[in-house]
Image (cartoon, rainbow, N blue to C red; front, side, top):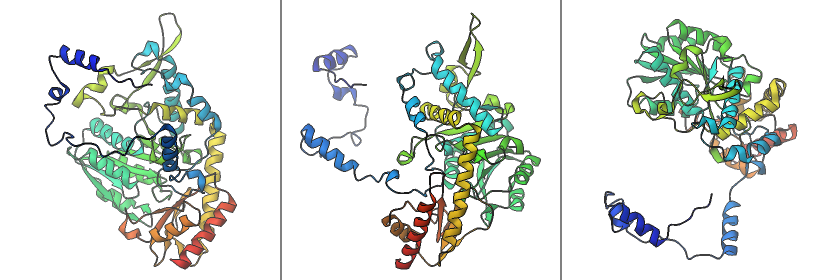
Length: 451
């Protein structure tokens, strides 16, 4: 959409309409110390050819994820995206669709959201999904607010240490000015201890947050953990890997009340960290506390199938403290991409992507564990991520050398877990080949020899 400057005459006309003589008067309420009262330090203007060359040089400094095999994980993954996802999601009908608040003009958008909600409910095994949220972290935090509002418990929220540390940070920020405190349960050998979890749950615990697979890639013994939380009356929130649901048991089947996920792996590129997609589904009993938009199906006065925002009026989203959420965007385009991805892949394709990721991750773990100086940090079952320790070495220096040799080799865990200061989290998706995994192992062998 082109941006057209106001002419001097138009500016004067607008100022006169509101009874002002200058733009300075318009901004008098801005404190002087905040105003920009100095010239901008900008270089001389460039010609179009010069500007194109300059911006192109800046762009080439960015290291594309496609330039080298990617073994990064921790919530964002280099999964395959079918070409049809880009082709359909980039159609003008979706890019330019008006807000679904105006339902009579937004049937296509509303139907796409309805299909997304249906697919997420089927994927998680729960009753209802909202129209998506900002990202995986805010989805967990919004689930916590749902639990507090639904259960009327305000003492604490209990989270496993194996829940993504950034998701816990976002939740802690949400709770900063509310009554509940966030209590973290330590892990043992990379998995949540049921004894520690039970000890942390009190009579006024609003919610228990778990992750499956957890942040370390380990598969939790999830059913006893969920049962223990529910026996104490807490709402159970489980953050999942949506690709993993192609193989793993649906969280609705083992008793989860609210399920959240980072939807980036479902047809959304890594794109330097966003925009991403927060997924949230829940049991019907939580329906009236669900944040964001919810699209329903009905019939118009002529008996034709149509779609509407349901259970919530537009004002729901601007009612301040009475609203269910302060989320102002539902990442609709990212949700559309997830819908197209799930529809194209189907149950068989999703299962195949998950199975290939798991097999290749286990092959990579075996190859890396053969290297002197590297060892697997945990011995439990894992899905597509695992943690290795580089004994006596600085992981950041090891990863820098692995990067120099041509790989996005993993994530150092010391920034979140001091006890894992020598550990690296490595993710493997269905895109990685045997030769790439073998080459990664060789790169780690060389890196350890020189660091």
